[in-house]
Length: 173
Length: 104
View 1 (cartoon, helix red, strand yellow):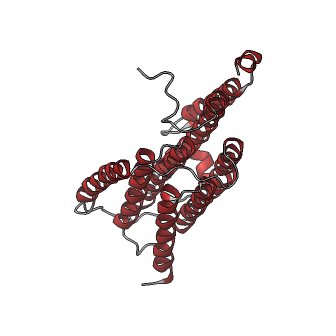
View 2: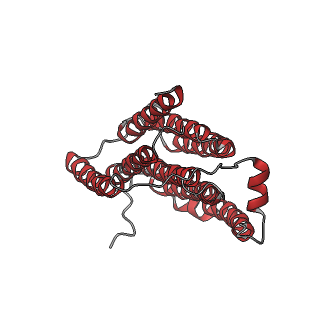
View 3: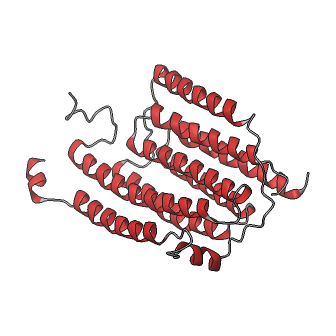
């Protein structure tokens, strides 16, 4: 058991602990902070798998972008320190039952499955990522890349249009 | 990382996935449901990266899929938060049980 294995299990424990706290806490602001730590743990897992670029993306987009956006919207829609209502016990039991059944099914399929580990080296340098991502031959991903850029523009315009404050709704309130 | 079996990473990601599913079903606050969705998307990303690293290392296809998932998640979150803020303006709440105007 070397140091990397220990770090992996520590990281998994951290991710799962903060994940459980995210979905069970009563303070919504704390839930966002717990989510942030879980996402940082996932970035650590990427780093251990030598996917440095993915870890950087995870930290920049998720931790720096999405969680900050969620925290801002919590401040816009909740009083500071306000506790959100916990679900009814019947609802908790039903959801836990569904989740456990799904987890048991997935693990029952997953654990007996033997995976053939490939011994080849994985070249995940930024140069190789760029070459493969923007290739238009050899199964390159340039078309999804362009589609996703149009999608981001559409999401940007769409969220501005949805969140814009019109004068008519002002009168109705 | 070579000594960690692939199955352990997959078990981690499936537990994380069903934590997200539990949160999505149990919590009635829209922002909590959004955070549970983020947990689900992240567990899928771990799966893609692990498969890419362990089973198909000669190409980076799992990585590209995770990058696209992250991008779609960013767009999804911005749209969802725009909708939530608009909803809060009209109903003064973000609880899904209280917004029943379009029910039935």
